[in-house]
Image (cartoon, rainbow, N blue to C red):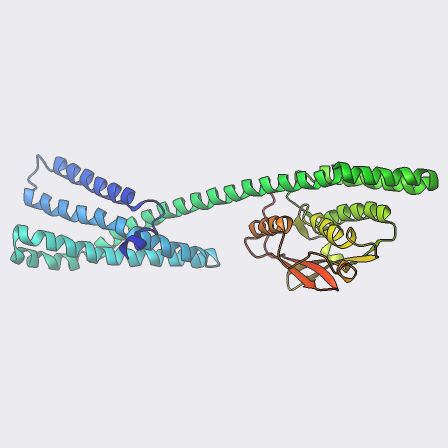
Length: 371
């Protein structure tokens, strides 16, 4: 029980304990030196030393509980409400510390000076309680300030680690996208398509070549951005699909159902193209029958809902599609989870012999990390 309680401390409890005991000894020594040449009695110095020792020994024990409550206060909305709760927290711990520390003080003093003398001193505690409480309140404010500093540093370190991880994942996504576009198979088929069109339809061949150039240019332009507008992400996907449609002629068609208000929303860079590539790979490449690929985007209750669906399963009954996520979808899901702190989602809907659909829901009220 005690081990679990002390585990809530932001740093190892022994460091707080060593600091508290060390600080109390420093004050005790300085107290003796200050009154060495005065009429102040050794008895008075002893009282002060014992009280100081218990005062700074107990504060480290309070730290884990203060830190847990402090974390809960930080979740409350409104700075004013947080400040009020912080002051109440400081007052609560100051009051309990004043009582507990003096109880231990009197219990320690009892065998040294006798119970009768201790009982004579107890009324002084009530006489000076307000001043004692004020002193402990200042101590509590100082400790809360230190804990807030530790909490801020920990959050900063965690966020920095998340940002570094996101940057790494973004670079991996960029490399994967460029690799898919520049791999020999893709280039060979695309160039072969352009070559076959040159003699038949020069203008059409030029359009395909222009799409290839635009696709690569868009990826390079957006390569340093983690978050882009949905219209830019959609533009990259449209260029990619236009090239693939030339390759497969009438093998597949694309249906777009994109609400205009979605175009200006911010989305993760290079998140849509892997979904489209997955649909082509498993829906179009594995059948000779026409396939319909649909892209749907709309807003609903503060969320951007994007759906990528293909009906390749109608013709390819031997497809190995399932509701389990492959490596690519798992990586995308992990990236969305970090970008939106677990509030985004990726879901697979599979209806055998009918369609395969991936649904992504992105919360718009929470900005993703852009750096």
